[in-house]
Image 1 (cartoon, rainbow, N blue to C red):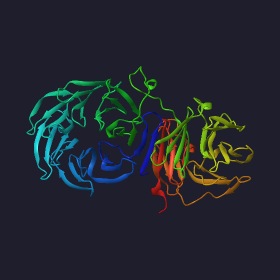
Image 2: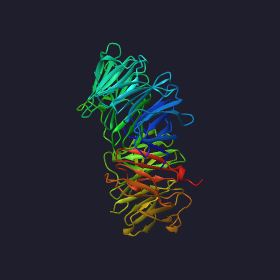
Image 3: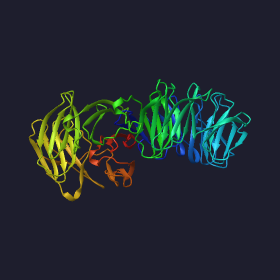
Image 4: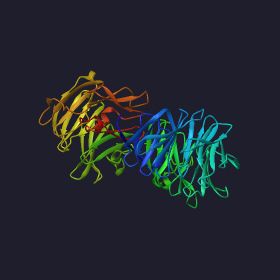
Length: 554
Protein backbone atom coordinates (compact mmCIF):
# COMPACT_ATOMS: atom_id res chain seq x y z
CA UNK A 1 0.00 0.00 0.00
CA UNK A 2 1.32 3.51 -0.76
CA UNK A 3 2.73 5.34 2.17
CA UNK A 4 1.56 8.78 1.13
CA UNK A 5 -1.79 9.69 -0.34
CA UNK A 6 -2.63 13.30 -1.04
CA UNK A 7 -5.79 14.85 -2.32
CA UNK A 8 -7.41 18.18 -3.00
CA UNK A 9 -11.07 18.94 -2.91
CA UNK A 10 -12.27 21.30 -5.61
CA UNK A 11 -14.25 23.62 -3.34
CA UNK A 12 -13.57 26.56 -1.09
CA UNK A 13 -12.51 24.75 2.06
CA UNK A 14 -9.94 22.55 0.33
CA UNK A 15 -8.98 19.06 1.39
CA UNK A 16 -5.25 19.49 0.89
CA UNK A 17 -4.38 15.86 1.49
CA UNK A 18 -6.00 12.47 1.96
CA UNK A 19 -4.06 9.74 3.75
CA UNK A 20 -5.40 6.22 3.29
CA UNK A 21 -4.62 3.95 6.23
CA UNK A 22 -6.04 0.71 4.86
CA UNK A 23 -8.04 0.52 8.10
CA UNK A 24 -10.61 2.64 9.90
CA UNK A 25 -8.99 5.55 11.80
CA UNK A 26 -10.60 6.12 15.18
CA UNK A 27 -9.12 8.48 17.74
CA UNK A 28 -6.84 11.25 16.49
CA UNK A 29 -4.53 13.39 18.61
CA UNK A 30 -2.23 16.20 17.49
CA UNK A 31 1.01 17.57 18.88
CA UNK A 32 3.51 19.89 17.21
CA UNK A 33 4.10 18.38 13.71
CA UNK A 34 2.76 14.90 14.40
CA UNK A 35 -0.63 13.26 14.63
CA UNK A 36 -1.35 9.88 16.16
CA UNK A 37 -4.21 7.84 14.72
CA UNK A 38 -5.75 4.82 16.41
CA UNK A 39 -6.68 1.98 14.06
CA UNK A 40 -7.11 -1.79 14.08
CA UNK A 41 -4.41 -3.12 16.47
CA UNK A 42 -2.05 -0.19 15.74
CA UNK A 43 -1.32 3.45 16.42
CA UNK A 44 -0.05 5.18 13.28
CA UNK A 45 2.09 8.32 13.64
CA UNK A 46 1.87 10.70 10.64
CA UNK A 47 3.74 13.86 9.70
CA UNK A 48 1.26 16.75 9.57
CA UNK A 49 3.09 18.54 6.75
CA UNK A 50 3.57 15.67 4.31
CA UNK A 51 1.09 13.07 5.53
CA UNK A 52 3.89 10.52 5.48
CA UNK A 53 4.00 7.70 8.00
CA UNK A 54 6.59 8.20 10.74
CA UNK A 55 6.01 5.11 12.87
CA UNK A 56 3.59 2.33 13.78
CA UNK A 57 3.06 1.37 17.43
CA UNK A 58 1.85 -2.22 17.66
CA UNK A 59 1.10 -3.76 21.05
CA UNK A 60 -2.69 -3.72 21.35
CA UNK A 61 -4.66 -6.83 20.40
CA UNK A 62 -7.84 -5.07 19.23
CA UNK A 63 -9.03 -1.76 17.84
CA UNK A 64 -7.31 1.31 19.33
CA UNK A 65 -10.33 3.50 19.99
CA UNK A 66 -8.76 6.59 21.61
CA UNK A 67 -5.34 8.23 21.77
CA UNK A 68 -3.90 11.39 23.30
CA UNK A 69 -0.45 12.98 23.52
CA UNK A 70 1.05 14.20 26.78
CA UNK A 71 1.55 17.96 27.14
CA UNK A 72 5.25 17.68 26.14
CA UNK A 73 4.60 15.31 23.23
CA UNK A 74 7.03 12.72 24.56
CA UNK A 75 4.37 10.26 25.66
CA UNK A 76 1.15 8.86 24.30
CA UNK A 77 -1.82 7.26 26.05
CA UNK A 78 -4.09 4.85 24.17
CA UNK A 79 -7.25 2.95 25.03
CA UNK A 80 -8.34 -0.15 23.17
CA UNK A 81 -11.17 -2.57 22.73
CA UNK A 82 -8.78 -5.10 24.26
CA UNK A 83 -9.82 -3.46 27.61
CA UNK A 84 -6.37 -2.09 28.37
CA UNK A 85 -4.85 1.37 28.60
CA UNK A 86 -1.24 1.68 27.45
CA UNK A 87 1.28 4.44 28.16
CA UNK A 88 3.79 4.78 25.29
CA UNK A 89 7.21 6.39 24.91
CA UNK A 90 6.86 8.17 21.55
CA UNK A 91 10.60 8.46 20.96
CA UNK A 92 11.33 4.74 21.37
CA UNK A 93 7.93 3.44 20.27
CA UNK A 94 7.80 1.17 23.32
CA UNK A 95 5.11 0.58 25.94
CA UNK A 96 6.16 2.01 29.33
CA UNK A 97 3.20 0.63 31.26
CA UNK A 98 -0.08 -1.20 30.69
CA UNK A 99 -3.08 -0.56 32.93
CA UNK A 100 -5.49 -3.44 33.59
CA UNK A 101 -8.84 -3.32 35.37
CA UNK A 102 -11.61 -2.34 32.98
CA UNK A 103 -14.08 -5.06 31.95
CA UNK A 104 -15.26 -3.37 28.73
CA UNK A 105 -14.01 -1.44 25.72
CA UNK A 106 -11.94 1.65 26.52
CA UNK A 107 -13.82 4.56 24.95
CA UNK A 108 -11.82 7.60 26.10
CA UNK A 109 -8.50 8.45 27.77
CA UNK A 110 -6.84 11.60 29.07
CA UNK A 111 -3.50 12.42 30.69
CA UNK A 112 -2.95 15.08 33.33
CA UNK A 113 -0.93 18.21 32.53
CA UNK A 114 1.89 17.11 34.88
CA UNK A 115 1.95 13.60 33.35
CA UNK A 116 1.38 11.87 36.69
CA UNK A 117 -2.17 10.54 36.19
CA UNK A 118 -4.34 8.97 33.51
CA UNK A 119 -8.12 8.86 33.47
CA UNK A 120 -10.04 6.37 31.33
CA UNK A 121 -13.71 5.83 30.49
CA UNK A 122 -15.12 2.48 29.47
CA UNK A 123 -18.11 0.53 28.19
CA UNK A 124 -18.11 -1.18 31.60
CA UNK A 125 -19.79 2.05 32.84
CA UNK A 126 -16.86 3.17 34.97
CA UNK A 127 -14.18 5.83 35.09
CA UNK A 128 -10.80 4.81 36.44
CA UNK A 129 -8.08 7.17 37.66
CA UNK A 130 -4.54 5.74 37.35
CA UNK A 131 -1.16 6.56 38.87
CA UNK A 132 1.28 6.48 35.95
CA UNK A 133 4.36 5.69 38.01
CA UNK A 134 2.92 2.79 40.00
CA UNK A 135 0.18 1.63 37.64
CA UNK A 136 -2.31 1.58 40.52
CA UNK A 137 -5.97 2.49 40.14
CA UNK A 138 -6.54 5.44 42.51
CA UNK A 139 -10.32 5.75 42.14
CA UNK A 140 -13.22 4.08 40.32
CA UNK A 141 -16.30 6.17 39.52
CA UNK A 142 -19.49 4.35 38.55
CA UNK A 143 -21.96 5.50 35.88
CA UNK A 144 -25.33 4.15 34.75
CA UNK A 145 -24.26 4.03 31.09
CA UNK A 146 -21.19 3.75 28.88
CA UNK A 147 -18.63 6.50 29.46
CA UNK A 148 -18.08 7.98 25.98
CA UNK A 149 -15.77 10.81 26.96
CA UNK A 150 -13.55 11.57 29.93
CA UNK A 151 -10.88 14.22 30.54
CA UNK A 152 -9.14 16.24 33.21
CA UNK A 153 -10.76 19.64 33.61
CA UNK A 154 -8.55 22.38 32.15
CA UNK A 155 -10.06 24.78 34.70
CA UNK A 156 -9.11 22.69 37.72
CA UNK A 157 -6.65 19.84 36.97
CA UNK A 158 -7.89 17.99 40.08
CA UNK A 159 -11.38 17.67 38.61
CA UNK A 160 -12.61 15.18 36.02
CA UNK A 161 -15.23 15.66 33.32
CA UNK A 162 -17.16 12.76 31.82
CA UNK A 163 -19.93 12.19 29.29
CA UNK A 164 -22.35 9.34 29.85
CA UNK A 165 -26.02 8.85 29.02
CA UNK A 166 -26.02 12.14 27.02
CA UNK A 167 -25.11 14.00 30.21
CA UNK A 168 -21.91 15.87 31.09
CA UNK A 169 -20.70 15.22 34.63
CA UNK A 170 -18.09 16.94 36.83
CA UNK A 171 -16.17 15.07 39.57
CA UNK A 172 -13.66 16.10 42.23
CA UNK A 173 -10.33 14.40 42.99
CA UNK A 174 -12.03 11.92 45.34
CA UNK A 175 -14.64 10.85 42.82
CA UNK A 176 -17.51 12.91 44.28
CA UNK A 177 -19.95 14.49 41.84
CA UNK A 178 -19.94 18.28 41.43
CA UNK A 179 -23.40 19.51 40.32
CA UNK A 180 -24.95 20.54 38.03
CA UNK A 181 -24.87 18.23 35.02
CA UNK A 182 -25.38 19.45 31.46
CA UNK A 183 -27.04 17.90 28.43
CA UNK A 184 -24.59 16.76 25.77
CA UNK A 185 -22.82 13.89 24.05
CA UNK A 186 -19.40 15.58 23.81
CA UNK A 187 -17.60 18.49 25.44
CA UNK A 188 -14.56 20.53 24.35
CA UNK A 189 -12.83 23.51 25.98
CA UNK A 190 -11.31 26.55 24.30
CA UNK A 191 -7.49 26.92 24.60
CA UNK A 192 -7.85 29.65 27.24
CA UNK A 193 -10.51 27.57 29.09
CA UNK A 194 -12.94 30.51 29.19
CA UNK A 195 -15.49 28.71 26.99
CA UNK A 196 -16.63 25.19 26.28
CA UNK A 197 -18.73 23.64 23.53
CA UNK A 198 -21.37 20.93 23.92
CA UNK A 199 -22.84 18.65 21.25
CA UNK A 200 -26.46 17.85 21.96
CA UNK A 201 -28.39 16.24 19.13
CA UNK A 202 -28.69 18.68 16.25
CA UNK A 203 -27.44 21.59 18.36
CA UNK A 204 -23.87 22.70 19.16
CA UNK A 205 -23.78 25.20 22.04
CA UNK A 206 -20.84 27.34 23.14
CA UNK A 207 -20.99 28.43 26.81
CA UNK A 208 -19.02 30.64 29.17
CA UNK A 209 -17.04 28.44 31.59
CA UNK A 210 -17.70 30.64 34.64
CA UNK A 211 -21.31 31.73 34.21
CA UNK A 212 -22.48 28.79 32.03
CA UNK A 213 -24.19 31.44 29.89
CA UNK A 214 -24.73 30.70 26.20
CA UNK A 215 -22.22 32.46 23.92
CA UNK A 216 -23.51 30.99 20.65
CA UNK A 217 -25.77 28.20 19.47
CA UNK A 218 -25.62 26.44 16.10
CA UNK A 219 -27.79 23.88 14.39
CA UNK A 220 -26.64 20.90 12.30
CA UNK A 221 -29.10 19.99 9.57
CA UNK A 222 -30.61 16.50 9.53
CA UNK A 223 -28.00 14.79 11.70
CA UNK A 224 -26.65 14.55 15.25
CA UNK A 225 -23.44 16.35 16.17
CA UNK A 226 -21.06 13.82 17.73
CA UNK A 227 -17.71 15.55 18.30
CA UNK A 228 -16.55 19.15 18.61
CA UNK A 229 -13.28 21.04 19.06
CA UNK A 230 -11.86 24.58 19.18
CA UNK A 231 -9.17 26.05 16.94
CA UNK A 232 -5.85 26.90 18.66
CA UNK A 233 -6.68 30.62 18.65
CA UNK A 234 -10.19 30.00 19.99
CA UNK A 235 -11.88 31.77 17.08
CA UNK A 236 -13.45 28.71 15.46
CA UNK A 237 -15.49 25.74 16.64
CA UNK A 238 -15.78 22.59 14.53
CA UNK A 239 -18.25 19.75 14.91
CA UNK A 240 -18.96 16.43 13.21
CA UNK A 241 -22.29 15.11 12.04
CA UNK A 242 -21.93 11.75 10.30
CA UNK A 243 -19.62 12.27 7.29
CA UNK A 244 -19.65 16.08 7.36
CA UNK A 245 -17.63 18.57 9.39
CA UNK A 246 -18.95 22.05 10.17
CA UNK A 247 -16.88 25.08 11.19
CA UNK A 248 -18.30 28.19 12.90
CA UNK A 249 -16.73 31.57 13.66
CA UNK A 250 -17.56 32.38 17.30
CA UNK A 251 -15.23 35.40 17.65
CA UNK A 252 -17.16 37.72 15.33
CA UNK A 253 -19.94 39.99 16.66
CA UNK A 254 -22.37 37.73 14.80
CA UNK A 255 -21.24 34.09 15.27
CA UNK A 256 -21.95 32.20 12.07
CA UNK A 257 -21.18 29.15 9.96
CA UNK A 258 -18.10 29.65 7.77
CA UNK A 259 -17.84 26.27 6.11
CA UNK A 260 -19.11 22.78 5.54
CA UNK A 261 -16.51 20.13 4.73
CA UNK A 262 -17.79 17.32 2.53
CA UNK A 263 -15.60 14.51 1.19
CA UNK A 264 -15.69 11.50 3.50
CA UNK A 265 -17.86 8.61 2.36
CA UNK A 266 -18.58 7.24 5.85
CA UNK A 267 -18.90 8.45 9.44
CA UNK A 268 -16.20 10.77 10.77
CA UNK A 269 -14.81 9.25 13.96
CA UNK A 270 -12.51 12.04 15.13
CA UNK A 271 -11.71 15.69 14.48
CA UNK A 272 -8.88 18.00 15.55
CA UNK A 273 -7.40 21.38 14.56
CA UNK A 274 -3.71 21.36 13.66
CA UNK A 275 -3.54 25.16 13.21
CA UNK A 276 -5.98 28.09 13.27
CA UNK A 277 -6.79 27.36 9.61
CA UNK A 278 -6.19 23.60 9.33
CA UNK A 279 -8.47 20.74 10.32
CA UNK A 280 -7.83 16.98 10.39
CA UNK A 281 -10.61 14.39 10.25
CA UNK A 282 -10.57 10.59 10.45
CA UNK A 283 -13.40 8.47 9.08
CA UNK A 284 -14.71 4.93 8.92
CA UNK A 285 -14.06 5.16 5.15
CA UNK A 286 -10.43 4.36 6.05
CA UNK A 287 -8.99 7.81 5.38
CA UNK A 288 -7.60 10.81 7.22
CA UNK A 289 -8.27 14.14 5.52
CA UNK A 290 -6.33 17.38 5.98
CA UNK A 291 -8.53 20.45 5.39
CA UNK A 292 -7.54 24.05 4.68
CA UNK A 293 -10.10 26.53 5.97
CA UNK A 294 -10.84 29.43 3.61
CA UNK A 295 -13.36 32.25 3.52
CA UNK A 296 -16.78 32.00 1.91
CA UNK A 297 -18.32 34.85 -0.04
CA UNK A 298 -21.97 35.53 0.71
CA UNK A 299 -23.18 34.26 -2.66
CA UNK A 300 -21.72 30.83 -1.91
CA UNK A 301 -23.93 30.20 1.14
CA UNK A 302 -26.97 28.01 0.58
CA UNK A 303 -29.56 30.04 2.49
CA UNK A 304 -32.28 27.41 2.18
CA UNK A 305 -30.56 24.99 4.52
CA UNK A 306 -28.64 27.49 6.60
CA UNK A 307 -25.33 25.84 5.71
CA UNK A 308 -22.82 26.15 2.90
CA UNK A 309 -22.98 23.21 0.55
CA UNK A 310 -20.95 23.52 -2.63
CA UNK A 311 -21.72 20.88 -5.21
CA UNK A 312 -18.79 18.76 -6.26
CA UNK A 313 -17.76 18.84 -9.89
CA UNK A 314 -16.37 15.52 -11.19
CA UNK A 315 -12.74 15.49 -12.31
CA UNK A 316 -12.58 14.56 -15.97
CA UNK A 317 -8.91 14.86 -16.86
CA UNK A 318 -5.59 14.57 -15.08
CA UNK A 319 -2.13 15.58 -16.29
CA UNK A 320 0.96 14.62 -14.28
CA UNK A 321 4.13 16.65 -14.91
CA UNK A 322 6.61 15.40 -12.30
CA UNK A 323 9.62 17.34 -13.65
CA UNK A 324 7.72 20.55 -12.98
CA UNK A 325 6.36 19.13 -9.70
CA UNK A 326 2.75 19.75 -10.67
CA UNK A 327 -0.54 18.04 -11.49
CA UNK A 328 -3.17 19.67 -13.72
CA UNK A 329 -6.85 18.72 -13.43
CA UNK A 330 -10.03 19.76 -15.17
CA UNK A 331 -13.61 19.22 -14.10
CA UNK A 332 -16.91 18.94 -15.93
CA UNK A 333 -17.57 22.69 -15.55
CA UNK A 334 -14.41 23.60 -17.41
CA UNK A 335 -12.41 24.61 -14.33
CA UNK A 336 -8.69 23.82 -14.73
CA UNK A 337 -6.56 23.70 -11.60
CA UNK A 338 -2.81 23.32 -11.09
CA UNK A 339 -1.73 21.43 -7.95
CA UNK A 340 1.63 21.21 -6.20
CA UNK A 341 2.74 17.56 -6.38
CA UNK A 342 4.58 17.59 -3.04
CA UNK A 343 1.95 19.36 -0.91
CA UNK A 344 -1.31 18.69 -2.75
CA UNK A 345 -2.23 22.39 -2.54
CA UNK A 346 -3.85 24.30 -5.40
CA UNK A 347 -1.43 26.73 -7.09
CA UNK A 348 -3.68 28.30 -9.73
CA UNK A 349 -7.20 28.10 -11.13
CA UNK A 350 -8.58 29.10 -14.54
CA UNK A 351 -11.87 28.73 -16.38
CA UNK A 352 -12.25 27.26 -19.86
CA UNK A 353 -15.16 29.44 -20.91
CA UNK A 354 -15.77 27.57 -24.14
CA UNK A 355 -16.77 24.37 -22.35
CA UNK A 356 -18.30 25.69 -19.17
CA UNK A 357 -21.03 23.37 -17.93
CA UNK A 358 -20.32 20.89 -20.74
CA UNK A 359 -19.08 17.41 -19.84
CA UNK A 360 -15.96 16.76 -21.88
CA UNK A 361 -14.99 13.36 -23.18
CA UNK A 362 -11.31 13.46 -22.30
CA UNK A 363 -8.56 16.01 -21.81
CA UNK A 364 -4.92 16.77 -21.14
CA UNK A 365 -2.79 19.83 -20.38
CA UNK A 366 0.82 20.92 -20.80
CA UNK A 367 2.91 23.97 -20.05
CA UNK A 368 4.36 24.96 -23.44
CA UNK A 369 6.61 28.03 -23.77
CA UNK A 370 5.44 29.19 -20.36
CA UNK A 371 1.75 28.97 -21.28
CA UNK A 372 -0.73 26.42 -20.00
CA UNK A 373 -2.29 24.74 -23.02
CA UNK A 374 -5.37 22.63 -22.39
CA UNK A 375 -6.84 20.19 -24.91
CA UNK A 376 -10.10 18.29 -24.73
CA UNK A 377 -12.18 15.93 -26.83
CA UNK A 378 -15.92 16.34 -27.33
CA UNK A 379 -18.30 15.07 -30.00
CA UNK A 380 -15.57 13.97 -32.49
CA UNK A 381 -13.65 17.26 -32.08
CA UNK A 382 -10.31 18.00 -30.41
CA UNK A 383 -9.98 21.56 -29.12
CA UNK A 384 -6.87 23.44 -27.97
CA UNK A 385 -7.28 26.26 -25.47
CA UNK A 386 -4.71 28.87 -24.34
CA UNK A 387 -5.53 29.54 -20.68
CA UNK A 388 -3.41 32.71 -20.55
CA UNK A 389 -5.06 34.35 -23.57
CA UNK A 390 -8.41 32.69 -22.75
CA UNK A 391 -9.01 31.79 -26.37
CA UNK A 392 -9.56 28.73 -28.51
CA UNK A 393 -6.48 28.17 -30.65
CA UNK A 394 -7.36 25.12 -32.74
CA UNK A 395 -10.18 22.71 -33.47
CA UNK A 396 -9.72 19.35 -35.17
CA UNK A 397 -12.51 17.11 -36.39
CA UNK A 398 -11.45 13.51 -35.76
CA UNK A 399 -14.34 12.07 -37.82
CA UNK A 400 -14.44 9.27 -35.24
CA UNK A 401 -17.94 8.69 -33.83
CA UNK A 402 -16.78 6.22 -31.16
CA UNK A 403 -16.12 7.05 -27.52
CA UNK A 404 -12.82 8.49 -26.37
CA UNK A 405 -10.90 5.82 -24.46
CA UNK A 406 -7.75 7.87 -23.98
CA UNK A 407 -6.48 11.31 -24.93
CA UNK A 408 -2.95 12.66 -24.37
CA UNK A 409 -0.61 15.43 -25.47
CA UNK A 410 2.94 14.18 -26.01
CA UNK A 411 5.62 15.15 -23.52
CA UNK A 412 7.08 17.94 -25.68
CA UNK A 413 3.69 19.15 -26.88
CA UNK A 414 4.33 18.24 -30.51
CA UNK A 415 1.68 15.55 -30.95
CA UNK A 416 -1.80 14.52 -29.83
CA UNK A 417 -2.68 10.85 -29.28
CA UNK A 418 -6.30 9.71 -29.37
CA UNK A 419 -7.38 6.18 -28.37
CA UNK A 420 -10.85 4.96 -29.31
CA UNK A 421 -12.48 1.55 -29.63
CA UNK A 422 -11.04 1.02 -33.11
CA UNK A 423 -7.44 2.08 -32.55
CA UNK A 424 -4.99 4.94 -31.97
CA UNK A 425 -4.75 8.11 -34.06
CA UNK A 426 -2.01 10.74 -33.86
CA UNK A 427 -1.70 14.29 -35.22
CA UNK A 428 0.92 17.03 -35.14
CA UNK A 429 -0.21 19.43 -32.42
CA UNK A 430 -0.13 22.70 -34.34
CA UNK A 431 -0.50 21.77 -38.00
CA UNK A 432 -3.08 18.99 -37.51
CA UNK A 433 -1.25 16.93 -40.11
CA UNK A 434 -1.88 13.22 -39.48
CA UNK A 435 1.07 11.27 -38.14
CA UNK A 436 -0.53 7.84 -38.44
CA UNK A 437 -3.11 5.40 -37.18
CA UNK A 438 -3.03 1.96 -35.55
CA UNK A 439 -5.99 -0.43 -35.75
CA UNK A 440 -6.85 -2.51 -32.69
CA UNK A 441 -9.22 -5.40 -32.12
CA UNK A 442 -12.49 -4.43 -30.45
CA UNK A 443 -12.42 -7.40 -28.08
CA UNK A 444 -9.16 -6.37 -26.33
CA UNK A 445 -10.47 -3.33 -24.41
CA UNK A 446 -7.18 -1.40 -24.29
CA UNK A 447 -6.27 1.80 -22.49
CA UNK A 448 -3.33 4.16 -22.90
CA UNK A 449 -0.47 3.62 -20.53
CA UNK A 450 -0.33 6.93 -18.66
CA UNK A 451 3.49 6.81 -18.49
CA UNK A 452 5.19 9.15 -20.98
CA UNK A 453 8.91 9.83 -21.37
CA UNK A 454 9.33 11.25 -24.88
CA UNK A 455 7.53 12.96 -27.73
CA UNK A 456 6.71 10.23 -30.22
CA UNK A 457 6.09 6.95 -28.40
CA UNK A 458 2.84 5.70 -26.94
CA UNK A 459 1.83 2.30 -25.59
CA UNK A 460 -1.28 0.61 -24.30
CA UNK A 461 -2.33 -1.92 -21.67
CA UNK A 462 -5.13 -4.44 -21.90
CA UNK A 463 -7.49 -4.66 -18.96
CA UNK A 464 -6.95 -7.50 -16.51
CA UNK A 465 -3.91 -8.56 -18.51
CA UNK A 466 -0.16 -7.90 -18.24
CA UNK A 467 0.02 -7.61 -22.06
CA UNK A 468 1.02 -4.26 -23.52
CA UNK A 469 1.94 -2.93 -26.96
CA UNK A 470 3.76 0.18 -28.10
CA UNK A 471 4.24 2.26 -31.24
CA UNK A 472 6.66 4.99 -32.23
CA UNK A 473 4.93 7.76 -34.19
CA UNK A 474 8.05 9.60 -35.45
CA UNK A 475 6.95 9.46 -39.10
CA UNK A 476 4.47 6.58 -39.11
CA UNK A 477 3.49 4.05 -36.44
CA UNK A 478 6.30 1.53 -35.87
CA UNK A 479 5.93 -1.20 -33.18
CA UNK A 480 8.42 -1.21 -30.32
CA UNK A 481 8.77 -2.92 -26.95
CA UNK A 482 7.46 -0.77 -24.08
CA UNK A 483 9.95 0.12 -21.33
CA UNK A 484 10.76 -2.28 -18.53
CA UNK A 485 12.28 -1.89 -15.09
CA UNK A 486 9.35 -0.09 -13.51
CA UNK A 487 6.13 -1.30 -11.87
CA UNK A 488 3.30 -1.92 -14.31
CA UNK A 489 -0.13 -1.09 -12.95
CA UNK A 490 -3.53 -2.46 -13.89
CA UNK A 491 -7.06 -1.83 -12.63
CA UNK A 492 -9.27 -4.72 -11.62
CA UNK A 493 -12.88 -4.86 -10.45
CA UNK A 494 -15.32 -2.10 -9.65
CA UNK A 495 -16.68 0.54 -11.96
CA UNK A 496 -16.03 4.23 -12.41
CA UNK A 497 -19.74 5.12 -12.67
CA UNK A 498 -20.89 3.87 -9.29
CA UNK A 499 -19.73 2.10 -6.17
CA UNK A 500 -20.26 -1.56 -7.06
CA UNK A 501 -17.62 -3.01 -4.82
CA UNK A 502 -13.96 -2.04 -4.62
CA UNK A 503 -11.56 -1.56 -7.49
CA UNK A 504 -7.89 -2.34 -7.07
CA UNK A 505 -4.69 -1.09 -8.60
CA UNK A 506 -2.52 -4.13 -9.21
CA UNK A 507 1.19 -4.44 -9.95
CA UNK A 508 1.07 -6.74 -12.98
CA UNK A 509 4.74 -7.66 -12.59
CA UNK A 510 4.18 -9.26 -9.20
CA UNK A 511 0.43 -9.80 -9.31
CA UNK A 512 0.04 -7.98 -5.99
CA UNK A 513 -2.74 -5.52 -5.19
CA UNK A 514 -1.08 -2.27 -4.21
CA UNK A 515 -3.97 0.11 -3.63
CA UNK A 516 -7.76 0.03 -3.33
CA UNK A 517 -9.84 2.74 -4.99
CA UNK A 518 -13.04 3.49 -3.09
CA UNK A 519 -15.91 5.56 -4.37
CA UNK A 520 -16.66 7.02 -7.75
CA UNK A 521 -13.24 7.31 -9.35
CA UNK A 522 -12.28 8.21 -12.89
CA UNK A 523 -11.90 5.75 -15.73
CA UNK A 524 -8.59 3.90 -15.64
CA UNK A 525 -7.48 5.58 -18.86
CA UNK A 526 -7.89 9.02 -17.26
CA UNK A 527 -5.17 8.19 -14.75
CA UNK A 528 -1.53 9.28 -15.18
CA UNK A 529 1.49 7.45 -13.88
CA UNK A 530 5.21 8.24 -14.16
CA UNK A 531 6.72 5.22 -12.41
CA UNK A 532 6.49 6.75 -8.96
CA UNK A 533 3.50 9.08 -8.71
CA UNK A 534 0.02 8.06 -9.81
CA UNK A 535 -2.66 10.74 -10.05
CA UNK A 536 -6.37 10.24 -10.55
CA UNK A 537 -9.59 12.21 -10.26
CA UNK A 538 -12.76 11.24 -8.44
CA UNK A 539 -16.39 11.81 -9.30
CA UNK A 540 -16.56 13.66 -5.97
CA UNK A 541 -14.21 16.35 -7.33
CA UNK A 542 -11.17 15.10 -5.45
CA UNK A 543 -7.70 14.79 -6.96
CA UNK A 544 -5.76 11.81 -5.65
CA UNK A 545 -1.96 11.70 -5.66
CA UNK A 546 -0.36 8.37 -4.75
CA UNK A 547 3.35 7.95 -4.08
CA UNK A 548 4.47 4.40 -4.99
CA UNK A 549 8.18 4.96 -4.32
CA UNK A 550 8.31 1.77 -2.27
CA UNK A 551 7.62 -0.22 -5.48
CA UNK A 552 10.66 1.18 -7.26
CA UNK A 553 13.73 -1.07 -7.63
CA UNK A 554 16.17 -0.45 -4.83
